[in-house]
Image (cartoon, rainbow, N blue to C red; front, side, top):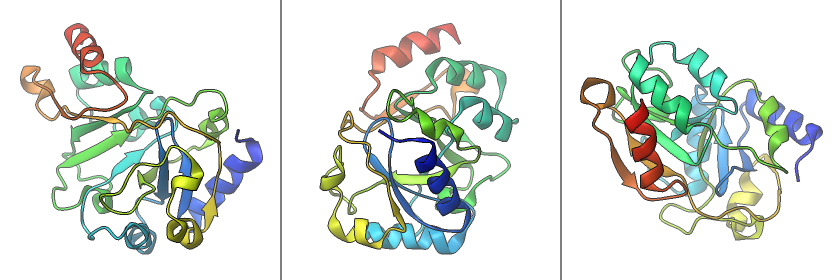
Length: 206
């Protein structure tokens, strides 16, 4: 369980360019400030992941996400309001090329996460700015639903390690919404924590 002091320490770590291991609603992740190149490079180095591969930008409150992305078009925003917070990574059009360090080779696509912060994690809702996040594992490795499953080298190399016990252990569902505004088309690119049927039902009402 995390408390207010953990959230404050997490926020300070991110704002000074640190890299943190933290619990999301699905699995343990690595986080850093999304517009700080040194921090992004360190995060990728800890994972052994090639530079430039895209990662998600995570907000800890959906209203903060919508405020930061005012260019979201109405139909897409309506669907996101039904799906978030939750165990989904939404691939969205990024016409203003926001958060380019997280976008990798395609600056016109942004991955968005807003975790569902249940009991034990709700202190993180006090985070008022986003992080760039990726799973706390070596590239291609197993996702960690307990802190002990995060590779020791990653824990040792991070500036902060937060332990919230055992998590659900299923990574987020990745859903491509880049064409949704245009023609209502969407596609699940990775099955995960949110069933495809839930997305289908939400999209039918958007």
